Image 1 (cartoon, helix red, strand yellow):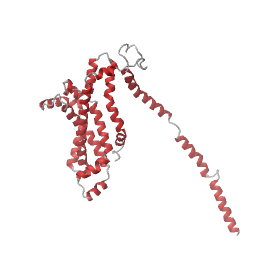
Image 2 (cartoon, helix red, strand yellow):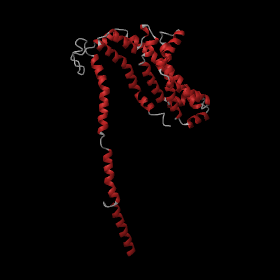
Image 3 (tube, helix red, strand yellow):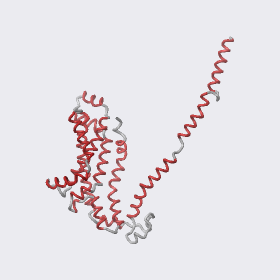
Image 4 (cartoon, one colour):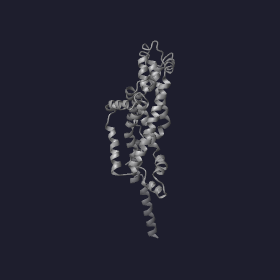
Length: 309
Protein backbone atom coordinates (compact mmCIF):
# COMPACT_ATOMS: atom_id res chain seq x y z
CA UNK A 1 0.00 0.00 0.00
CA UNK A 2 2.78 2.37 0.90
CA UNK A 3 4.46 1.56 -2.40
CA UNK A 4 1.26 2.49 -4.27
CA UNK A 5 1.05 5.79 -2.37
CA UNK A 6 4.70 6.45 -3.07
CA UNK A 7 4.16 5.73 -6.80
CA UNK A 8 1.14 8.03 -6.89
CA UNK A 9 3.10 10.79 -5.20
CA UNK A 10 5.95 10.40 -7.67
CA UNK A 11 3.58 10.54 -10.67
CA UNK A 12 1.88 13.62 -9.24
CA UNK A 13 5.23 15.31 -8.67
CA UNK A 14 6.29 14.47 -12.23
CA UNK A 15 3.00 15.84 -13.55
CA UNK A 16 3.43 19.09 -11.59
CA UNK A 17 6.97 19.44 -12.86
CA UNK A 18 5.75 19.07 -16.44
CA UNK A 19 2.95 21.65 -16.22
CA UNK A 20 4.78 23.93 -13.80
CA UNK A 21 5.66 27.40 -15.16
CA UNK A 22 9.19 26.84 -13.92
CA UNK A 23 9.59 23.76 -16.17
CA UNK A 24 11.39 23.90 -19.45
CA UNK A 25 8.18 23.93 -21.55
CA UNK A 26 6.99 26.91 -19.57
CA UNK A 27 10.26 28.68 -20.22
CA UNK A 28 10.05 27.94 -23.97
CA UNK A 29 6.45 29.14 -24.31
CA UNK A 30 7.08 32.91 -24.04
CA UNK A 31 10.06 32.55 -26.38
CA UNK A 32 7.93 30.92 -29.03
CA UNK A 33 5.28 33.60 -28.59
CA UNK A 34 7.89 36.32 -28.97
CA UNK A 35 9.16 34.64 -32.14
CA UNK A 36 5.63 34.50 -33.53
CA UNK A 37 5.07 38.17 -32.72
CA UNK A 38 8.41 39.04 -34.32
CA UNK A 39 7.45 37.14 -37.45
CA UNK A 40 4.14 39.04 -37.61
CA UNK A 41 5.74 42.48 -37.42
CA UNK A 42 5.12 44.55 -40.55
CA UNK A 43 8.05 45.04 -42.88
CA UNK A 44 8.07 48.82 -42.91
CA UNK A 45 11.17 49.07 -45.08
CA UNK A 46 9.72 46.74 -47.70
CA UNK A 47 6.40 48.58 -47.64
CA UNK A 48 8.06 51.96 -48.13
CA UNK A 49 10.13 50.57 -50.99
CA UNK A 50 7.00 49.11 -52.62
CA UNK A 51 5.18 52.44 -52.43
CA UNK A 52 8.18 54.25 -53.90
CA UNK A 53 8.32 51.76 -56.77
CA UNK A 54 4.56 52.10 -57.30
CA UNK A 55 4.91 55.89 -57.51
CA UNK A 56 7.74 55.58 -60.04
CA UNK A 57 5.63 53.28 -62.23
CA UNK A 58 2.25 54.98 -61.77
CA UNK A 59 3.32 58.61 -62.19
CA UNK A 60 4.13 58.38 -65.93
CA UNK A 61 0.88 56.48 -66.59
CA UNK A 62 -1.09 59.09 -64.67
CA UNK A 63 0.64 61.89 -66.56
CA UNK A 64 -0.14 60.28 -69.94
CA UNK A 65 -3.81 59.79 -69.07
CA UNK A 66 -4.48 63.30 -67.81
CA UNK A 67 -2.40 64.93 -70.55
CA UNK A 68 -4.39 63.14 -73.25
CA UNK A 69 -7.51 64.86 -71.85
CA UNK A 70 -6.06 68.37 -71.91
CA UNK A 71 -6.98 70.90 -74.59
CA UNK A 72 -4.23 72.04 -76.89
CA UNK A 73 -4.80 75.71 -76.05
CA UNK A 74 -2.75 76.75 -73.06
CA UNK A 75 -1.19 73.33 -72.72
CA UNK A 76 2.29 74.54 -71.79
CA UNK A 77 0.96 77.05 -69.24
CA UNK A 78 -0.97 74.44 -67.20
CA UNK A 79 0.40 72.36 -64.33
CA UNK A 80 1.19 68.96 -65.83
CA UNK A 81 0.61 67.03 -62.58
CA UNK A 82 -2.87 68.38 -61.88
CA UNK A 83 -6.01 67.12 -63.63
CA UNK A 84 -7.26 69.42 -66.39
CA UNK A 85 -9.91 71.92 -65.38
CA UNK A 86 -11.70 71.49 -68.71
CA UNK A 87 -11.06 67.90 -69.88
CA UNK A 88 -11.73 67.24 -73.53
CA UNK A 89 -11.64 64.34 -75.98
CA UNK A 90 -10.37 66.43 -78.87
CA UNK A 91 -7.10 64.49 -78.99
CA UNK A 92 -8.92 61.15 -79.20
CA UNK A 93 -11.28 62.45 -81.88
CA UNK A 94 -8.35 63.73 -83.92
CA UNK A 95 -6.63 60.33 -83.73
CA UNK A 96 -9.76 58.36 -84.62
CA UNK A 97 -10.43 60.60 -87.61
CA UNK A 98 -7.10 59.53 -89.09
CA UNK A 99 -6.26 55.99 -90.29
CA UNK A 100 -5.95 54.68 -86.74
CA UNK A 101 -8.24 51.68 -87.31
CA UNK A 102 -6.25 50.62 -90.36
CA UNK A 103 -3.05 50.72 -88.32
CA UNK A 104 -4.82 48.80 -85.55
CA UNK A 105 -5.95 46.11 -87.99
CA UNK A 106 -2.42 45.77 -89.38
CA UNK A 107 -1.00 45.37 -85.86
CA UNK A 108 -3.60 42.73 -84.99
CA UNK A 109 -2.92 40.76 -88.19
CA UNK A 110 0.86 40.82 -87.73
CA UNK A 111 0.69 39.97 -84.02
CA UNK A 112 -1.81 37.11 -84.33
CA UNK A 113 -0.02 35.58 -87.31
CA UNK A 114 3.43 35.81 -85.72
CA UNK A 115 2.27 34.38 -82.37
CA UNK A 116 0.28 31.54 -83.98
CA UNK A 117 3.18 30.45 -86.18
CA UNK A 118 5.67 30.74 -83.32
CA UNK A 119 3.60 28.70 -80.87
CA UNK A 120 2.82 25.99 -83.43
CA UNK A 121 6.44 25.56 -84.54
CA UNK A 122 7.92 25.77 -81.04
CA UNK A 123 5.47 23.31 -79.44
CA UNK A 124 6.39 20.74 -82.07
CA UNK A 125 10.10 21.45 -81.70
CA UNK A 126 10.04 21.38 -77.89
CA UNK A 127 8.10 18.10 -77.80
CA UNK A 128 10.55 16.48 -80.22
CA UNK A 129 13.58 17.73 -78.28
CA UNK A 130 12.24 16.36 -74.99
CA UNK A 131 10.90 13.02 -76.21
CA UNK A 132 13.66 12.27 -78.77
CA UNK A 133 16.73 12.76 -76.64
CA UNK A 134 19.31 12.11 -79.34
CA UNK A 135 22.40 13.89 -80.55
CA UNK A 136 20.44 15.50 -83.37
CA UNK A 137 17.79 16.94 -81.07
CA UNK A 138 20.39 18.18 -78.58
CA UNK A 139 22.25 19.88 -81.43
CA UNK A 140 18.99 21.41 -82.64
CA UNK A 141 18.27 22.72 -79.14
CA UNK A 142 21.72 24.31 -78.98
CA UNK A 143 21.12 25.80 -82.42
CA UNK A 144 17.87 27.35 -81.22
CA UNK A 145 19.58 28.81 -78.16
CA UNK A 146 22.23 30.35 -80.39
CA UNK A 147 19.57 32.72 -81.63
CA UNK A 148 19.46 34.37 -78.21
CA UNK A 149 22.95 35.74 -78.80
CA UNK A 150 22.12 37.43 -82.12
CA UNK A 151 20.98 41.07 -81.73
CA UNK A 152 18.07 42.18 -83.83
CA UNK A 153 19.85 45.28 -85.11
CA UNK A 154 22.67 43.20 -86.60
CA UNK A 155 20.28 41.38 -88.94
CA UNK A 156 18.22 44.26 -90.29
CA UNK A 157 20.34 44.84 -93.44
CA UNK A 158 20.47 41.12 -94.44
CA UNK A 159 16.73 40.87 -93.77
CA UNK A 160 16.05 43.90 -95.94
CA UNK A 161 18.10 42.41 -98.77
CA UNK A 162 16.52 38.94 -98.58
CA UNK A 163 12.95 40.19 -98.30
CA UNK A 164 13.49 42.57 -101.19
CA UNK A 165 14.82 39.75 -103.37
CA UNK A 166 11.87 37.55 -102.34
CA UNK A 167 9.38 40.26 -103.30
CA UNK A 168 8.09 40.60 -99.73
CA UNK A 169 9.31 44.13 -99.04
CA UNK A 170 6.54 46.51 -97.98
CA UNK A 171 4.16 43.70 -97.07
CA UNK A 172 2.80 42.48 -93.74
CA UNK A 173 4.58 39.17 -94.32
CA UNK A 174 7.86 41.09 -94.11
CA UNK A 175 6.94 41.88 -90.51
CA UNK A 176 5.61 38.44 -89.59
CA UNK A 177 8.53 36.27 -90.71
CA UNK A 178 11.37 38.12 -88.90
CA UNK A 179 9.22 38.39 -85.77
CA UNK A 180 8.73 34.62 -85.80
CA UNK A 181 12.45 34.02 -86.27
CA UNK A 182 13.43 36.12 -83.28
CA UNK A 183 10.65 34.71 -81.07
CA UNK A 184 11.57 31.05 -81.61
CA UNK A 185 14.70 30.80 -79.37
CA UNK A 186 13.19 32.01 -76.10
CA UNK A 187 9.91 30.20 -76.82
CA UNK A 188 11.67 26.88 -77.37
CA UNK A 189 13.71 27.41 -74.20
CA UNK A 190 10.63 27.97 -72.03
CA UNK A 191 8.58 25.14 -73.54
CA UNK A 192 11.41 22.60 -73.37
CA UNK A 193 11.96 23.29 -69.66
CA UNK A 194 8.23 23.04 -68.99
CA UNK A 195 7.65 19.81 -70.94
CA UNK A 196 10.65 18.19 -69.22
CA UNK A 197 8.85 18.59 -65.89
CA UNK A 198 5.92 16.45 -67.05
CA UNK A 199 6.36 13.04 -65.35
CA UNK A 200 7.58 10.34 -67.70
CA UNK A 201 5.10 7.90 -66.13
CA UNK A 202 2.25 9.76 -67.83
CA UNK A 203 3.84 9.26 -71.23
CA UNK A 204 4.50 5.60 -70.51
CA UNK A 205 0.93 4.96 -69.36
CA UNK A 206 -0.45 6.52 -72.53
CA UNK A 207 1.99 4.54 -74.64
CA UNK A 208 0.81 1.32 -72.94
CA UNK A 209 -2.75 2.28 -73.88
CA UNK A 210 -1.66 2.47 -77.50
CA UNK A 211 -1.30 6.23 -77.87
CA UNK A 212 1.06 7.62 -80.46
CA UNK A 213 3.08 10.80 -80.40
CA UNK A 214 0.32 12.94 -81.87
CA UNK A 215 -2.24 11.80 -79.31
CA UNK A 216 0.21 12.30 -76.44
CA UNK A 217 0.97 15.77 -77.76
CA UNK A 218 -2.65 16.88 -78.02
CA UNK A 219 -4.12 14.92 -75.08
CA UNK A 220 -1.29 15.22 -72.55
CA UNK A 221 1.30 17.86 -73.38
CA UNK A 222 -0.94 20.67 -74.59
CA UNK A 223 -3.34 20.60 -71.59
CA UNK A 224 -0.52 20.40 -69.04
CA UNK A 225 1.65 22.97 -70.83
CA UNK A 226 -1.14 25.50 -71.23
CA UNK A 227 0.34 27.96 -68.68
CA UNK A 228 3.68 27.93 -70.49
CA UNK A 229 2.01 28.29 -73.89
CA UNK A 230 -0.04 31.26 -72.69
CA UNK A 231 3.10 32.80 -71.18
CA UNK A 232 5.13 32.62 -74.38
CA UNK A 233 2.12 33.73 -76.43
CA UNK A 234 1.63 36.86 -74.32
CA UNK A 235 5.35 37.58 -74.18
CA UNK A 236 5.74 37.30 -77.95
CA UNK A 237 2.54 39.25 -78.57
CA UNK A 238 3.88 42.16 -76.53
CA UNK A 239 7.18 42.11 -78.41
CA UNK A 240 5.53 41.99 -81.84
CA UNK A 241 2.89 44.57 -80.92
CA UNK A 242 5.52 47.05 -79.70
CA UNK A 243 8.00 46.34 -82.51
CA UNK A 244 9.28 49.47 -84.24
CA UNK A 245 12.48 48.66 -86.13
CA UNK A 246 11.01 46.07 -88.51
CA UNK A 247 8.04 48.26 -89.55
CA UNK A 248 10.33 51.26 -89.98
CA UNK A 249 12.82 49.51 -92.28
CA UNK A 250 10.76 46.79 -93.98
CA UNK A 251 7.62 48.77 -94.88
CA UNK A 252 7.05 52.00 -96.73
CA UNK A 253 3.41 52.41 -97.75
CA UNK A 254 1.05 54.18 -95.33
CA UNK A 255 -1.47 51.32 -95.63
CA UNK A 256 1.14 48.87 -94.27
CA UNK A 257 1.91 50.82 -91.12
CA UNK A 258 1.36 49.34 -87.69
CA UNK A 259 0.58 51.19 -84.47
CA UNK A 260 4.14 51.85 -83.19
CA UNK A 261 5.12 53.36 -86.54
CA UNK A 262 1.86 55.31 -86.71
CA UNK A 263 2.65 56.88 -83.33
CA UNK A 264 5.87 58.14 -84.85
CA UNK A 265 3.94 59.61 -87.78
CA UNK A 266 1.39 61.14 -85.38
CA UNK A 267 4.24 62.85 -83.63
CA UNK A 268 5.40 64.24 -86.95
CA UNK A 269 1.91 65.31 -88.00
CA UNK A 270 1.03 66.89 -84.65
CA UNK A 271 4.36 68.33 -83.71
CA UNK A 272 3.00 70.57 -80.97
CA UNK A 273 -0.23 68.68 -80.31
CA UNK A 274 1.06 66.61 -77.41
CA UNK A 275 -2.43 65.63 -76.13
CA UNK A 276 -3.21 64.04 -79.52
CA UNK A 277 0.04 62.08 -79.48
CA UNK A 278 -0.62 60.78 -75.97
CA UNK A 279 -4.22 59.96 -76.91
CA UNK A 280 -2.82 57.74 -79.66
CA UNK A 281 -0.52 56.14 -77.08
CA UNK A 282 -3.46 55.37 -74.78
CA UNK A 283 -5.54 53.88 -77.60
CA UNK A 284 -2.66 51.73 -78.81
CA UNK A 285 -2.07 50.42 -75.27
CA UNK A 286 -5.66 49.34 -74.59
CA UNK A 287 -5.51 46.06 -76.60
CA UNK A 288 -2.31 45.02 -74.80
CA UNK A 289 -3.83 45.87 -71.43
CA UNK A 290 -6.96 43.82 -72.18
CA UNK A 291 -4.82 40.92 -73.37
CA UNK A 292 -2.88 40.93 -70.11
CA UNK A 293 -6.05 41.36 -68.06
CA UNK A 294 -7.60 38.17 -69.44
CA UNK A 295 -4.40 36.11 -69.41
CA UNK A 296 -2.67 37.26 -66.24
CA UNK A 297 -3.40 34.10 -64.23
CA UNK A 298 -1.98 31.80 -66.87
CA UNK A 299 0.93 34.19 -67.34
CA UNK A 300 1.87 34.09 -63.65
CA UNK A 301 1.45 30.30 -63.54
CA UNK A 302 3.68 29.88 -66.56
CA UNK A 303 6.37 32.21 -65.23
CA UNK A 304 6.58 30.34 -61.93
CA UNK A 305 6.60 26.81 -63.38
CA UNK A 306 8.78 24.84 -65.71
CA UNK A 307 12.14 25.61 -64.11
CA UNK A 308 12.05 23.42 -61.03
CA UNK A 309 14.79 21.09 -62.28
